[in-house]
Amino acid sequence: MKDKTSRQNPTAKASKSDLIEMQTEYALLKAMLKSKTLVAMLLIGLSLFAGLIYFLISMAS
Image 1 (cartoon, rainbow, N blue to C red):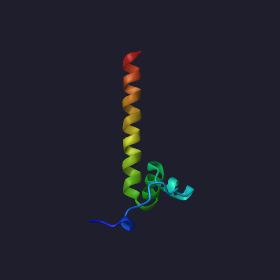
Image 2: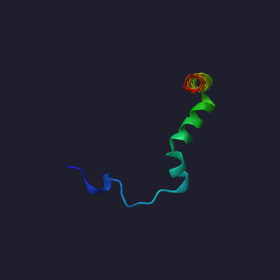
Image 3: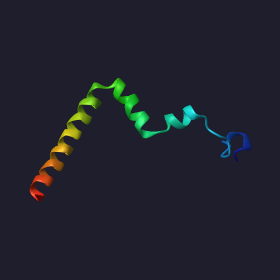
């Protein structure tokens, strides 16, 4: 049985820097600064997504 000291206090307040580091966008940018491959993959993915949107809009009009 676990004692009470091993549990985290759910009512404890997090600092602003902790809340910022929990954001997905922050983690993505932090990972992108370390990885050239991730940057390339995101750029390719965004360009393919933009191309798909352009194609769908051109087909609809």
